[in-house]
Length: 386
Image (tube, rainbow, N blue to C red; front, side, top):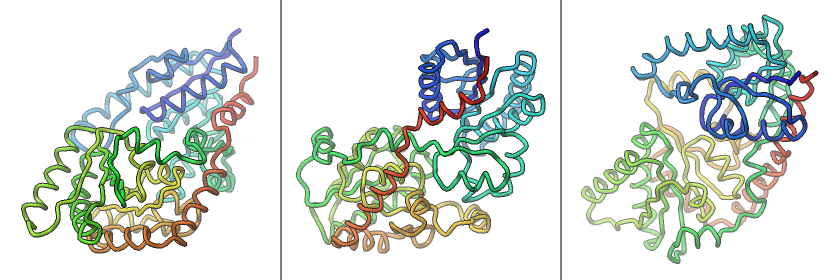
């Protein structure tokens, strides 16, 4: 009888993790069947999807998201009924915690072993979720080493499997190759500016980044600013900010912006320093050994709420992993053009600081490079029995 794995991924990042996990598991047991909610990459590895993954790929709190909730609840109930009637050897929920934890809890109550892949950031914001996780999950697979102890202290079995980005990114990134691929002109200072992928993030940070670039150009007129954006809408927002800043201060130098469609990875690799909104991009920059300044702005009320929930003094993954401030974080009111420009220039002009950052990021890279998909597969195989 073939082994069956129930599996649900919620968005593109989960689809990528899931596809690698399926591939690694099939190397060990080619007879495993995978069924649940899968994206195109997982389906290419043989997974069968009962529903479209796009239905789970929702962000924010707008009307469209609220409108979709009843359908998601119905879909989750139907999935639970399906897996209870056709029990898999193990169920794996990949990310999508709000959807998957409730599903995992129902399945675990029926005696189906549940694995959750990618622990939510309870260490940063929501430690109160640990009880919910314990009721839902037999085994947590974590991407970061410090998470394993947090889960195990709460009575949740956990395995640290490393981060897939650390396996993908070279220990010694090729800066020249990235600059050649982007066909960049020679410049004494290249700064990658990543204001985020979502419209709301770019709206909050575009003007800050443009005004910061103006201030840097007063010191370094031939600096080049690389701005990778992922959509036409975010590009328009940034270009409007450039126009508004130029119109308001005609006496200031006009920064040399190179706006890119995508290519965030190459832009960071090519840059001397990265200015980045908090998020996964901070980890990518660290693995690329790029010095950075982390910035973030959000609505005042949201900031007040999150500030009271926060359990750590830092928000950026590189600092969290290091357990100290390796790179600066300029948040809310501290994120202003004067502070940001001065911080950038102080870093790029201090060789000792640059060497210290590079050395710490190398240590983090080596810590996270664990042959992720193989380790995750080994943890799952322990639950698969003929």
